[in-house]
Length: 327
Image 1 (tube, rainbow, N blue to C red):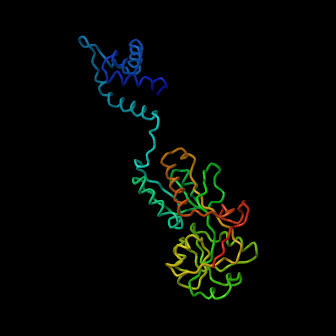
Image 2 (image 1 turned 180 degrees about the horizontal axis):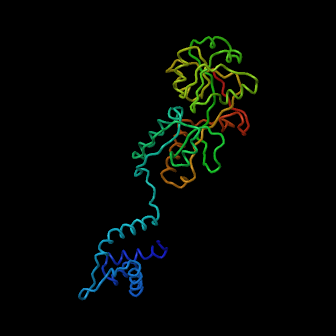
């Protein structure tokens, strides 16, 4: 069994194997010659081999010693490298693949800025985006992924998180939709077939919780996992889609959409970065987090007051959504 003292002997053994003499080995590691002679005696006892033997006026390595030379040197070199101070982080030298949980909303709102920053500062970085799932925290904990972006409810206590951006809800219909010819009322809103965006595949959500509290329901005719697909469907038929304002504005002209105020009091929400604390001090991971934060400051700078931080209406935060009048 390896003993703690054996680790110190490895350094002395490496010096003896590289120098081929007690005096040279002592000089190499900064020990006195008697101290190195004592180490050699312990090594001989431990290995059952003399390691160095007299040959004329000098000493030569035994066959066992010669067979160990490269292996011991590799072990000692790796151990020294592990204990060396970390080199200053240089983003341009980073060559690494990160796995990030995110929806197409995140990719559309922040993707171009994230890509630009990485191309300019860390071209060796690869990001593999995967869908959000209810198991995101487990994946982060078990090394299955590096970072998650989304709205989360009760996260495990050890998880780290930081607010990334905020957004609010608007109602989206196609241009020429009958709802645009009159004042958009709650009765009219609930009477229309709805499209629901469900990235995690589960029915219901914050809007349905709010309606339920008022003893109201809506008719969800289509539920899709992707924001862009939902917008395309809304552009083709007389549906109503309640969706994030930032992405609705991106496609308002492209898909021929009309944005309306939801005739219901809905709070804004916050998307957060989530990661496991084992990566707190990782320079590469810290750089990636900063990339997303920088992209959000550029592409989604406007902040909404008192945003929700959970997926359901039980969010403990309070306050009112800041709404801006639309023409």
